[in-house]
Image (cartoon, rainbow, N blue to C red):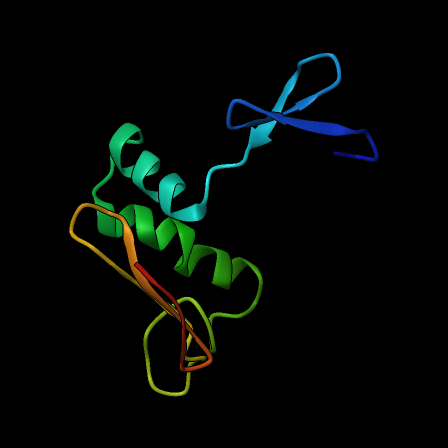
Length: 96
């Protein structure tokens, strides 16, 4: 964190003086948290973690959506919000 050492404790990233500097939650948990505590439905929370970052990074023509010509990178979610399968470049890389 800006060249300072960070320790991971209790699911959080902290500086040596115990200042909270971030989370180490996986993206799937962050999306569930955003939906649960952020007052938005799951599709909107998922878009906040996929479509919006792709747009900000200038990748909206190849990533962040499921459409012809886009990279074949996607996660298939269960109804409860857990990731069931992850596909990268058209290949399954994770299966629950």
